Image 1 (tube, rainbow, N blue to C red):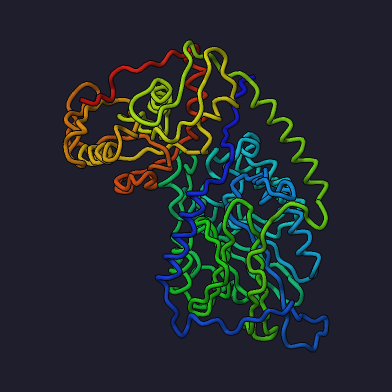
Image 2 (tube, helix red, strand yellow):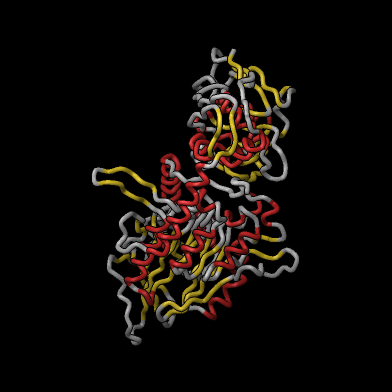
Length: 537
Ligand SMILES: [Zn+2]
């Protein structure tokens, strides 16, 4: 059996990524300003009052929510004086959900807003089966699909939907042929929580087709949120006291939806990985989102008038509850599943994937053989049914040597430890030149290339140092469009390479480590060398 059949990313949280998320969150929050309709009705620090007394005109329920778990099965571990501290992790997450639900077992609703599976070797190698097993044990009430749920195509996703012991909600996915809702999912569910009927409407990421492989979403239309919500709102209002949208729209999409449509009580969001420390209140719609990668569980208390369905109060107490080690009670069922999966993953990590005929070293600037191996593999990767003209990877993302001889997956993973995903874009020759200029603005070359060559002169002023560039042996044409494959880190402007953000027709591929592993397996033994692609004069 081919050990590389599984698709994988091994997960490490990057500080820069965390800081970027915080920065974006801060900017977005700062930019929103507070308006009269933006003011929460009130915030209490009390535990939910709730009452079993049927004469109480209100009911307080607890909504626990997660999003963008991204297969983060293993906790992040940091060494501290008292021992090892754990953050996140599937066992800790489910154990915390158990604990929080136990506080109010009859009045708790547990929701997930999508992108649950894609992100680590141990999750990806089971195409999400392990994570869904844990979600079943955790007793989720409903989830919606994220864009990454389609990463392995529709067949594995159908299996995950069938595996889920709770409804999969995605009202905006429509069968292209019939115009009817996709038969694998349901648009909404009515869940009884305490004395309330809660209508939960699911919305996936509407632009999923533009950032996934066409084949993965073949036969499906993804509708914009507003039209879908308007279509279902009347029947939801008829059946439910409280209306919740479970959304993978991203925070901006949630804001726009709350502004555009009246009558939504709550949007439980995802996709933008925002740690919303307190609920936003837009047009009498609360918006919450609980970060990413199982680092926190969102916990919102809503006090609702049972007769009118009006939210009369909500509590901000522990809106984001950190997921840490040493839970009150470990969920042993999930722990045994995770332990077994990690043991199996360890075997794979030790498996050889091929050989290198030469010892390979990382290098922080300029062209080097190991770097050429990486970009050559990227250029050979089929990202969206076509090969790119140019591949680009930063020097800084290549981290460890490969000794001559056999290469294990674990060794290759140490070379590319950042879970970066391949991303193909259209860029003009002029934009490619700007990217190269930036790569030599402070140091002699921090960008590796395949499919092209360039020469630069550090004695010239920054921004005007590229003296020659060729693609496929002919001079680069500033006006022409080139298909460029890079990694999502750079495509999102990493390394200050903001020109990538101007790219069009984006498409995601496998992780870089997968692409390189497959290339080594196909080409073994590999013997990459420095061949004058990047020349300083
Ligand atoms: Zn997403």
